[in-house]
Structures are given as structure tokens and as C-alpha cells.
Image (cartoon, rainbow, N blue to C red; front, side, top):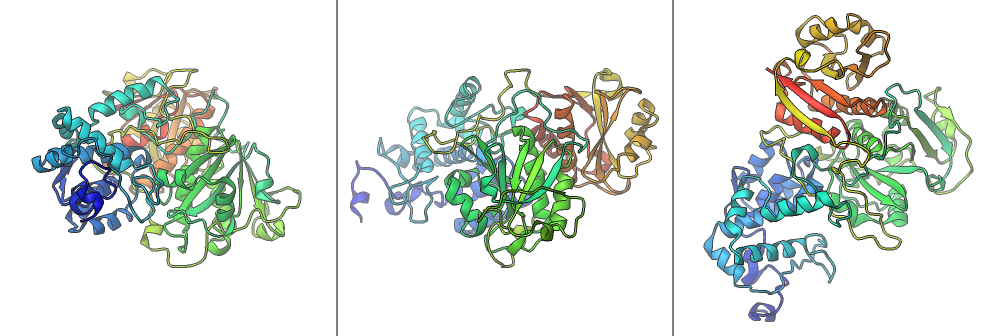
Length: 588
């Protein structure tokens, strides 16, 4: 027995031996969101996913270590980076209130300091080599205090139902009153589902035109890091954030922030963000491991995620290397076309910095704007991470939205933002807080006919196919409002993932608009969550640029299209939560 184990008054620095019951691997039944798991580790790993199949699979795994491995393979829920600490608190409360022996053992530790010491370099949940935030230890001490005060039972019930604890509720209220709170905690209301750290656009300067007229994609022979500070910078990384070679290594050496990036815990197809000395840095996660390869699908998913952030941050200038190319083996002409397709509706200048001959990089594409730049060395290479490997199934996964009746529950906490020190990452303003210049985003569902309930100031939204003839279903009603709508949509060259805007009133440039979300190629096909999300992001760009204030829509993507409404509803709220738009969903 170690000195630490025999000492009944000193700090507990390892959750092993006599103190193994403090470990998340300790076997005990834990109920979370109406499903029971064999340990906290199982429940925590399952909570990462919004897919019921993933959760069921993890619940069936025997060993906690295997459950942890399985959790690394799921598509992370969009709010994971901000929700995970409160989820861990809920699970610990459930664990230590479900078994009286565990309750007694935790309370018996008195006021001893609890520290999750480890050798695997986890400096977020624990402490390694004397360094770390010790989140798990801090939460255990909070649970211990609540149990001593007799507040455990109610909070355990809340945890089992996936509801916020009393502490969370009070912190949420405080967060709504202060944008300067270090941990950035915000309302649990599902109108404000959280996302990775980001800024809300201040004012209504056009973040997007919807037309592509203000979009520029240029290639220059220049060092990426010599672009002036008005440029945001972006590059591709793997989910493991090794950043050991190529331009990714340069990003790490110049800007640091690796622990901050890891704390966001974003998945493949998402984007992690740093805010450094007044500029945004975007880390597009396009593969699981540094030795893997991205695919065009994972790169496109990341670009869609990037688009949402560019709108939210009101970013006008973006510097990139030849993302996805070089050793990552994607072809630049195809990547460049993809950038245009995804980001082309924004008012945005993208400057791609190329080492060597610019014309060689653009040989397959004649219409790129070419700009002579100052010579520079070492900057914009083609490969962002490293060399080959198979990438695995995980690196080729598309984003999945939660197909589950809990999908429209918000999580609550904003990501932890480290206290700003000189030369460190600037602390972003928490999302989900109302703009000082206007009302906050609102969302409601009303029973009734959309065309009778909503006045003519509303812009209306529905889903269509690329070559829809507007002769069936709700499309017929849109055609009655605007008989020329089919022609006007066709004239804008619709493609899947676009939002085509048609002025609602003849002779008017709008708003209001009739928005046509192009979610499938043929009318008899079914849309995917990915294509619906892409079209909603395109809708967001147009709504922001045109200062549209009210949107009306049916339960888009559902009914005959077979998508799950709670999933779609959650998606809509997440995409529009940082606007001043009022969304009204009408249903029968």
C-alpha cells in the first residue's frame, strides 16, 4: 500500500487502488437519457454521439477501455466541445447517488483534494507531470459537496433525464448577464445550442451577397504568413492535432494554442478555431490521423463548417495554402472548384498562397484571378499535415446529425476560454448572447396553415429538387404566390446544396423572398441531412446579407422526405442561433 493510500488526510492524486472507485472505469450502473450504461466511461463516450445506434453499441461493450476506443470513432455531436463538462458532472452525480456505498465512500474523503493524476498526458480532465486543469477532480469535489449538502438526489434525477443540474441552472443565468465570464457558460434553452468558440457579427454589414459577385479566389506566389493581419488564415489538420510537419507545424510554432484546440474536441468535417492577436485561425479537420488521407467528402464537410464560421465572424479576407493537396493527394483544380461551390455566395476574398510557379498550380483552370505578390519563403505549401496511410473508415465519415428524439435539446455550456495572458490566445466572445444592436434569434412552432398564419412580411422557405416543376405538395402553393417561380429558380442554375432566392413580390428585389432549398436532384429522391445542412448554410448567407428578419417554413425535409424532425429542428436552431431572425415553423 502506498503512502498516499494509507494517508487519510492528504490529497488523493491517483484514482487507483483504494481509490479506484473515483475512476470513470469503475463498474457501476449509470443511467443517462433513458439508457443504462455499465460505467461512467461508457455513458460519457456514448454521449459524444447523437446517433442512437452508436449509443446502443457503446452500451453493449463490456470493458470501459474498449468503450473509450469506440467513442473515438463516432461522429461528434456539434455541441460536444461545449457540453462535455456538464455531461460529465451529470454522469458523476448519477454514479454517486445510485449506490449508497459509493456515496458514503466519496463523502468520507472529507475535504481532501482529488486529483486525476495520469501518465497519458491528459491535461484537461487530469494532471500530468504537475500540469493540468484537473476537470474530473474538480467535478468530483463539487459532487462531494452537493452530496454532503443533501442536494444529490434531485440532481441525479436531472442527470438521468439529461436535464441541467441546479448548479448549471444558476450558472446559465449568470452567463446570460455577463459576456466576460471566463468559462463562457450560456443558456440551456435550445434556442442557443452551443458551438465551438466564435464571434457574433457586430452589426449587419453584408457577410454574404447570395450572388457571388463579391467573391474573389486568387492565387499568388507569396508566403502565407506575410499576409497582413486583416486576413484570417486557414489550413487542414487531422483530428489528433499532431501538426508535426509541413505548414501545420508552422501554424503550431507560430500560434500555439494546441491545448485550446484539443479542448474543442471537434470531429472530422468540422473546424476548430483560435483567435490570435485580432485574427481568426481556422483548423479544418479533414481526417482522423496525421498519417491518413482526407477525401473530397471530408474536405467539403469542413468547408461547409467553415462557411458558417466565416458568416458568424463577418470574415472578409481569408488566406489559405493549397489545402488538401501536396502529400494529401487531392487535386487542386477539383479542390478549387469545391471552394467556389461552397463559399462562392459569400462576400469574401480568398488568397491562396503558392510556393513556386502560380501558373502551374492553376493550369487546369483558366478563369482564376491571378495576382502578383511579393516573393516569400517557407509559407504556403500544399500539404497541411503529413504523409500517407489508409486514413481508416473514420476519416471518410460524413457529418451525421442526431436522429433521436432528444435532438432538439440544447446543451448549454460555452467552451472554456483560458484567461487571457500577454501573448496568449484572445478569449472569444461567447456565442448565444443577444446582439446589443437588436433582438435575439427566436424560434417557434405553430399549428396551422403557413400561408394563412403568416403575413406577407415573412420570407418563406421550402425544399425542392433541382428540376422541380412546382406541381405537387407545398410547391404548388409557392407557385400560386409567384407564378414565375419555376422559371426564376431555373434561371439561377440550381444545384444540390444551394438556396435559391426569388423575390416574393413582382417588381421588388426583396425582402421578403421565397427561398427554395435545393436538397435533392430528382423529385422522387430523398434528401440527406448533409445536403439539407448545406442548403441551410447557403440560406443563412443570403439572410444575413439581405437583413431578412422573419422566416416561415413547414417542417422541411420531413413527411415524404423521411428526415427526422427533431434532428432537422436542432440543425436549424444551430445554424441560425447567432442571427436576429425570427423563425416560425407551421405544421398541421
